[in-house]
Length: 295
Length: 276
Image 1 (cartoon, each protein chain N blue to C red):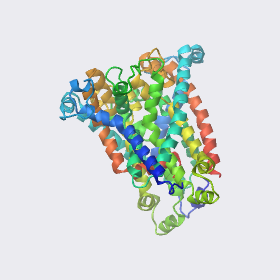
Image 2: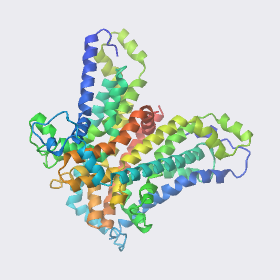
Image 3: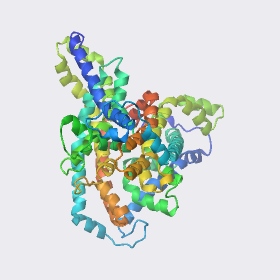
Image 4: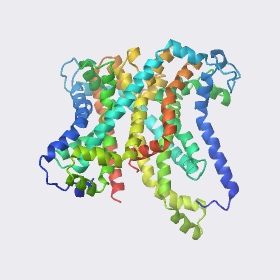
């Protein structure tokens, strides 16, 4: 961002700033109306007992008091953290492994890379349709091939890991792509020098690849953390939060309170708590990215 | 990595990679294969792994019994308009932030930074209320408008504009060109590849968006494909060939867009993640 300095040399022309505002205003209009305004509004709503049409009275911090004692809400926070724990590290590790496999290919590289990335460009409902069919208890090909008889999405123990596995299959291509970029940035000279010094492939991997890929790894981990915390679509489409609420995550709880229980104010309080958690994670991300930039 | 001395190991590695890739794609094969079977064949035990003869009954049924073409049209319209307006707004905003000095610029920066961190899904409730007041529920405007402002595109374009030598602009100013002409005749053509990349990524994102269209639409003719197909599934009950057929139809546009513009998608994804 400091690079703007030499670019903004004042030019001898009048009426400089209106042009700037004219160019910025279409973006700011949409941005303000559909992101900033709702962000302020959600805080206000959380202090009311509004229904989903926005009709209601100011009730102070009553929603937050109720939220603090709401076991279902804290369970949903717990389930979200459980989902994050199930997906973030496996998705990152898997992305790294696939990148290692793909990056050494030559002619096969593009087709193989696309094979791993393709699921990521599909709509979530296609992914969940495939998952519900393949993991179907009675007719699913998975249970047939592996001789299991688990009801993946109806079993309180297996539902969340199954949603996690589907998520990894769907999104790992994105992580793989970032790792491939990172691996390509490591200069071949370093490996050359190391092998002249007698380091074997394993040693090179431990003492060159791993430390030099770390900036990308930390980036992927934090992007994953943010993305997986926002889990909603897959859970809604695969389990609707069940069985026995075992996959009820924060955003699904918010959705249910707002649109099914007609409690806009209470659901807004859920949203505010969620935003606060996300802001803390984003602040960490920002620190991390800045650290990377200053190197 | 030095593997030249061990050709056997190299072949084993490559073979393993190919096997993993095939396993990775197998769910997609299975969906396509199921879509080409009759309903009774889909639940036959043992399952038939290759559908033969091909049965297009499921596709025909879906086309005749669901408004799938209307949903296609909705999704095309929404994705194209979202992409066009979001890229245009982002380009203009990025240009102003990169090259112009104006009062309140810092404020715009801060707004961008804050908005970048706000999760869109948490704004669903007030946004839905707003749309309700504007009578935009179940309308194209309702689906499209909130998807236009994407801070990420602004940040990416600004980074690219910052790298264009300032002499380009100074020369144009000497020739009497205004800032709009400088943007459209110099900066946009110079950065065509990243703009194209971000446009495709935005298009795929808008096509696949589930959450917001799901919140703001519930009348059947206004649904987009990702939302509409879930409705069909609950209407058909257990009908694996039909749900697979509609899944295949829903995936074709983005899958084809990706396979054609692979390099651009990769470039866009990298830029969006902050790795150029």
